[in-house]
Length: 150
Image (cartoon, rainbow, N blue to C red; front, side, top):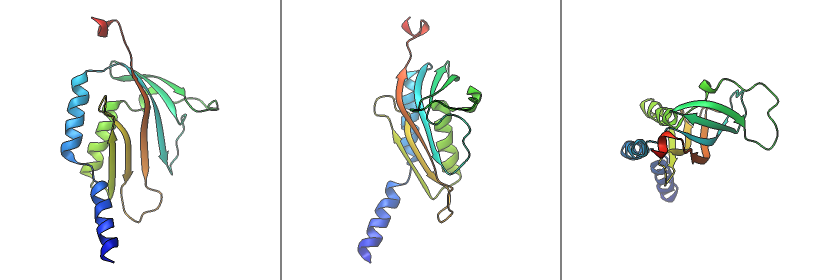
C-alpha cells in the first residue's frame, strides 16, 4: 500500500508543469526571435476536430498563414481558416490558461533546441471521462527569410 502511494505521489509530481520551467522556456523561445517557421501540429482528444489532423502549419511574422494536411491520406474536407490554428505563442498561452484553471494533470515537454512546447497533455478534471486533450508539435523548422538574413 505504501509503495503504491509513493508511486502515485511521484507520478503526480511528474505530471505537474512547473511555473518556473514554463517561464524559462518561454523566455528562451522569445530570445530566439523566430517569427517564421513551419511545424506539424496534431491534436488528440475526444472532441470534434474539423480540419486536417495532423496539419502542417506555416507561420509568418507570428501568424499562421498556411494549413496543409500532413497525414498519409488526403484530407477530404475543406480546410478551415488558418487563423483557427495555433502558433508557438498560442501554445504557451494554452499552458498559462490551463495553469490558472488548476487542472488535475498538466504535463509539458519542451524542445531542447528551440524551447517551444513540443507536447502538452491536459486532463482538466480527474474522473471526468473524455475531457483529456493533447497537443503535439513535430518537424519544427525555422524559415529563412530575406529579413532574417540581414
